Image (cartoon, rainbow, N blue to C red; front, side, top):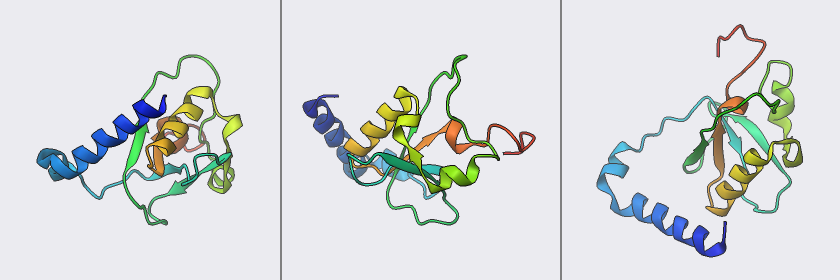
Length: 128
């Protein structure tokens, strides 16, 4: 994404938050159970999974909605849960996820929700 496109997107988001009464009326303090903390540094090589009940969320979050397809990709399981809370090396993520984290950071938003990483996909008998 070019710097011009990014600054235009930042302008639209700021305008929405400041000027759109309907958007502000629908903004709630609810957050998903888990989010990816992308950090505040655009050049960071890691991010991490966080539990929103245990950490204070500062600001909004973005979401990535996508078709998983049939390829293998990183997903949250009961086996890797504690590892993802410690950190996720960006290079271990699919390019789509890396791009979503990059855009999230460039828009000065700290948090991202990706279903395959924020919902337990294996090991909990589909309880999550």
